[in-house]
Structure formats: C-alpha cells, structure tokens
Length: 77
Image (cartoon, rainbow, N blue to C red):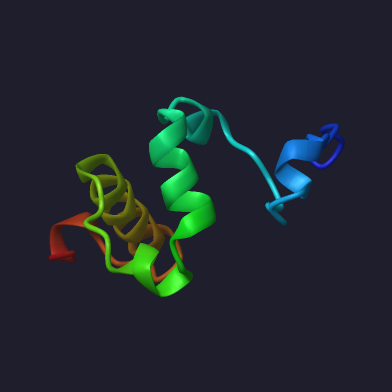
C-alpha cells in the first residue's frame, strides 16, 4: 500500500487536514465540519464512540493477544 497515490484536495489543506477517508466522506457536511474543523481534540475524545468502532477495537485486542502474546482464545476475557 505504500505505493498508493495520495492527493489531498486544496479544500482539505486550507483547514490543515492531513488526510481524507471514505468513511469521513459519507458523513453529512455539517456534521463533518463540526467534527473535523470546529471541535478540539479533547472534545472529540469525549464524544461517544460508535458500536462498530468499539467492536473493531475489541476484535483487534483479541487478535493481538492471541497472535502476539500467544494467549489461547479460551483464556482471553
């Protein structure tokens, strides 16, 4: 993936955004503006997380424990 072409549009550069993503582009413009331009990092951290985000984090931690720490799946709580 390191050979992917990264093109950041001028409208993103003007707000000092480092990247764009498909999931961000599906958010309605007013909410995206609030979340990525208006809110501070601290305010964003205090927002409730989506269930898919929480689920993805949980799966990642389970896989990480199993593959890296060699913990059996039955032992992971």
